[in-house]
Image 1: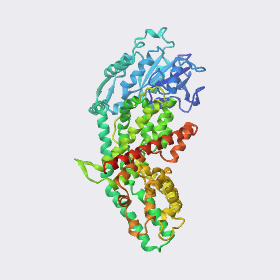
Image 2 (image 1 turned 180 degrees about the vertical axis):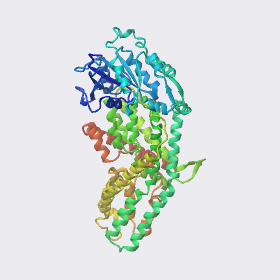
Image 3 (image 1 turned 60 degrees about the horizontal axis):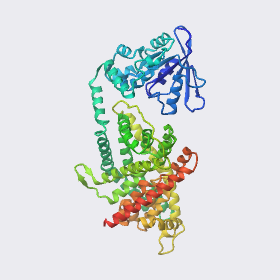
Image 4 (image 1 turned 180 degrees about the horizontal axis):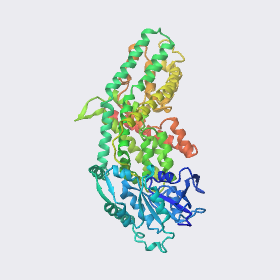
Length: 617
């Protein structure tokens, strides 16, 4: 064939287009941006059997030619020849995932209906065989009316046949594409046709694949799926307390033993106070919660690696659409459960600016891992370690309720924002569901090591630095005889000023003081309380006492519940605010975020304290 100038790879995301592009073009590639947009343009040189060079374009993954994102808009314009300065492809190479045939056939029908010369690359054929699917390319070719070539791009299987098919493709599009039998199908009709075509092309499937299909019928069911999701979350938070308590007690005992050893072997003085009151009491009170962090992330990593997390996103999409938020927001919000910083940065994938802004503004309401030590120490101090039902612990139930409160708060905040300052129409959302698979132990251990190291690194850098600064501010100037050291200190004067503001919501001086360094890192609230109580007592035995015992002796239950309510809604660390400023190109929205989140924290902490006090708790 002669006269071909361009060909384009088109298909759903995750169909293996980029792997196929690299295999077909090798190093003969050039990358630039399309004029006027930030979408990347990848082009390379493909050589036909005749020796004729063809420019091969790797188009962004799309779910529809009815574009809902900049990527899909570029694909639509290039395929239809509407992009200024971009030649219309003379052949389309439609890439389908052989192991996810039904979903990919929906878009395939839309592309084939254009009437352009098209060749189908039935890619990842080996993964389909691994999953027990036997696909008949001939049956698929007959149903679609275009050549179908099985390929395995990463192993270069089927590439020669694919290039030959491109070379022999029709030189002209149909005179009238509207005559194509697929041209006038609606989306529901294409989905039904995709199911029938896939059913006709799949000759057999293994019991394993059938089990996966049945699992999806339950886990993705609009009524059965959500209870399963919340049941899993409930089990996770029960385990966070039930499994971690013995390890926490052991670490807590180790920290206490170190304090006793330092007191026994060092003479009284500023250096000993620094080690016992600042480093060991402060930083040690945070480090002891490492087991809970590890257990929480172990569950999260298992859910991610098994393929269930994406299905959880699918389930949440319906709920989010009710509050005017795009389903594309779920992944950034999910990332915010680990830390709001990568969650806010992940909003770059959201095309609609109002949708993206709303997601940024509510991301801090997701309960990040830094809040877990705060929740854990308060719950351990005030919530009895007893069962409220078979296998249901009261402490885990309260922790589950705090996470749910954050989610509900984010949903309601999105509802209000989308009807006021970020008003706009929610965009559609389509996502690829990964295959179910058993998590790999090696990957799981690496992930846990990384999460644990991040936590310990924070404890050794940010938390250590802030705690040391706080200890200095609490230790100087020295109190006069009979005067409380905290009241006499620099930090005490700051705390007494803030205490006037937070006293109506049940906070005392020490609670007010902990709020200030917590803006550097949420966990520092725990080390701040531990350091404050270590300094405020001259009793060495009291220094060794666990923070939970100190809290139980000094706070009332309404105060503790109000403190928990504050941390559900209060803004996260200063790093989060800085990232929000960078992502919104100014201080307007970060300041708005601070004001509304501090307002919510104050209101709900106050309501919690007043209601708990009125109830006589």
